[in-house]
Image (cartoon, rainbow, N blue to C red):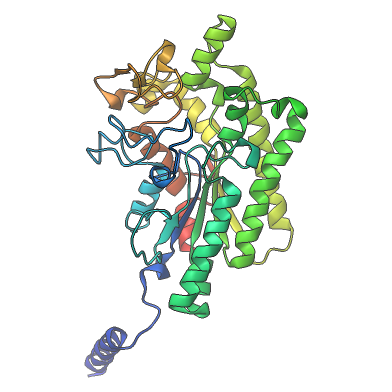
Length: 366
C-alpha cells in the first residue's frame, strides 16, 4: 500500500513538473560559450565585411567536405573541437553570434573569429579580436536579461562553461605581417601582455556571472605545415621552427600560472580546466601510427612544401589528399576533424595527466 501511494505521489510530481514553469530549460545542464580564433570559429567570419581587405572568407570547397558535405566557415574538413564538446554535453551545435536570425542563445553562443588574437594589434581587418568578443558577450547578456529576467540569466551564466582558444595568432601574425611588435619586447614581456589580456577577459566574464572556464595550451607552433615551410624557405633547414615553438612553451607555462593565480585571488566559485594540447600534439607527431595517423608534417590541402603555403587551400592552385583521415593537419595551420575529435575527447574525459585540474565533463557537472 505504501509503495502504491509513493508511486501516485511520484506520478503527480512528474505531472506537476510539466504543468508548472520551472527552471527545466535546456541550459539547466550548462550552456557553452565559445571564444577564440579559427580553431573554434564555426563561421562568424563569413558574416564580416571583408571586401576591402586581403582576408578571405573560407566558406569554400574543400572546407567542410567530410561531415557537413559543404563549406560552413569552419577551417577544417569537418567539425571543430567545440562541436564535439557540445555533442558530448548533449547540446545542439552552438549558434554563431553573427548568424542572422532570432536566436534564443540559451544553449550558448559562439563568439570566435578566425584570425583573432589577444592583442588588438594582431587583429587584421574586421576580425573580432578577444576584446571585441567580450563586448559582444556583454551585449548578448543584456539581450538575455531583457528576455528571461535577471534571475534566470544569473543561473544560465553561472552553470555555463566558457571555452577559449586564443594566442596562436599573437605569435604567428607578427611573422606573417612583418610586424615589429614582437621585436619591441623581450619574449617574456610579450607573452605577459598576451596572457594579461586573456586573464582580464576571464575576470570580466566572471564579474558578469561566469564561473567555469575551459582553456587550452598552444600546440607546438613550430611544427605546423606553415611553420615547416617557412623554415625551409627562410633557412633551407628541415624540421620544426624552434622560435615559434619556444614562444608556445613560454605562453603555455605563463597561462597555467595565471589560471592558478586567479584561483588564489578569492574569486568565489571560479574553476577551470586546462588541456595540454602541446603534450598531446607532440605525442601524435612523435608516434603518428599509435594515434591512427600516417601524415603529421604535411597538410591534406594546400600548395608548396608541406602544403604549407599560407591561404592556399581552396583559393589558389592547390593539391588535395585522397584520404583525409590519414592526416593530422587539413590545411597549413588547422587540424582535421579526426584530430579535432581526438583532442575534444581528451578535453572531455581525459585524465589529469593531460587535462587538469578538471576535465570538461567534470566542469559541466560541477
